[in-house]
Length: 455
Image (tube, rainbow, N blue to C red; front, side):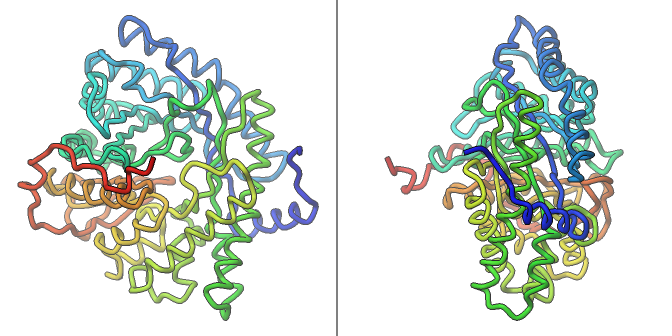
């Protein structure tokens, strides 16, 4: 059956747009660049540049046109590409950096705000391309403005590559140091994953997986304000009733996202991929996941009960999305980034929300420890240990988890980092200073859990 949307749904969507901050957070075009391989990094970079421009030259225009015609804000237009470590296997670190700069040039040329896919998948070990790309991350992120990088260090099937976990602690530190003049902003464009998904439209973790088609269009839609309004309008409902209300709200939001995605797909002559219904907050007032949780009855996010409230929210969002579309994908749930959510920031400042509580909440959210500023002198081994903890949560629970930490150079607990735009600002949070160095330096591979043997 062709996709359709009723008059009542249109009218309700108009209300959500006008009063509740509903928006399409991103239209992300995924592009396969496997055929761009050449004899060296420079020529490979040029081929990648030309292919991206060929496929995505109209992406921003089409997004802008849909926004004007339908009145639906489309905040970001983005691109993801095949993990560069795969197509550039065997190249040197310098050649990887050159490819990264061509990605940045392509992003500028077509007008997107971010391009993802400077990535490596090393959950079971390293190829030569993986090693070179990871070593190239700090310089690449320091010398480009729009390139995003991700490294997948663990899966439920493979276990945790602790060699990669150890190395990523050092890579994050170096990336922060090379962007020290901007509060370590390079780290805001770097994500370390467990169970990374191939069709995620959100940055900084987006890449175009090897199982994806030649080109596809994925939609990331975000509606914390809509869900917040629904929760506030039902202050006396029990939690079962409230879960159903959130589920129905997520259904409506997803329908809007699929409508926009299919229109854009048709105009760009690119297959429609998925709708990622993730409650992705912004620093704007009323666009906060923390506010939703507090509207359920918590005095502050971080209070006991926060994990249970977030679990209910995340599950209801997924159920509503799955009802609305056969093509829900990506991460689809609730994000809890600190710097991008004013409610989370307020809870940190009030002393209600700590990294330890955030880690507990990542067991039930869409991703993990996201956009958290920590002291600049935090040892690399502690960063690696935080990554290992998150990877363990993802591995054992068969879910995606991730870490995006900013060890802010020269900053201590209570200081602030300022990134601007959607990346926001954040207070520097305290980490547990007891050393895990001996554990982290063991390296090796933590075996996959027994429930990975489910064939």
